[in-house]
Length: 276
Ligand code: HPA
Image (cartoon, rainbow, N blue to C red; front, side, top):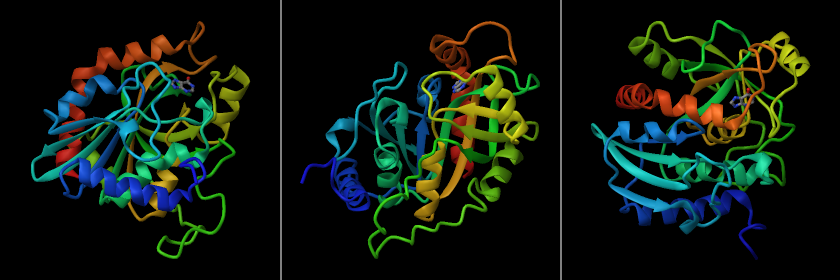
């Protein structure tokens, strides 16, 4: 059977074992996924202990997206062992939902009971400015996919009808707010992409209760929560969404916003991870 066809939870378990072996047999406390615009902030967490190309792990795929490095590293932050994923897989690259969440699922099965998901997002209202980090309060999964679709999970995994009431853990949000009392917060709408939205879509998302829009995160959050992890989400506003700002959008703008904000984002990551 190819890894493409393997039952996704068992494949993630095999990957989790490989992850532990490759990273020194230890477990992890926190997993951090660095999305578009965030890779430059990775060094803010401190020097890597171990760094490996993700493709060396079962079921992991290299990213085809500029700005995603497709390596993972381990870092010590205080007494925490942190697994940092520099890059992620997206639906718009042609991956299944199972493949998109594989890295996060593997990290949780390797012991990471806290998952920090970062992303680049368009702001649906002009009060959120490019370059700002925004705490994710909740999400609208508008991708039309779920990582829990498929045959019933194996018996060692929780049932598929996962509770999403506290998807982005109130406890973790309070930790961030204790460090950054003025950090804005909003609901993240996850869409499939890869095209940016039309202004009509942006208006519809805002009316539906979202404040941010992006093309990642929502499936990983569901998968991590399903396995019992606590999830924290932080978006970097890279642009005003179509029709909110003026002018056309492009991916370069998304990456540039991250590069400009790398130093403060790196400090934010370090402070937040140390406090989780
Ligand atoms: N829309 C969707 N995804 C995004 C955007 C956007 O405006 N900016 C960064 N990721």
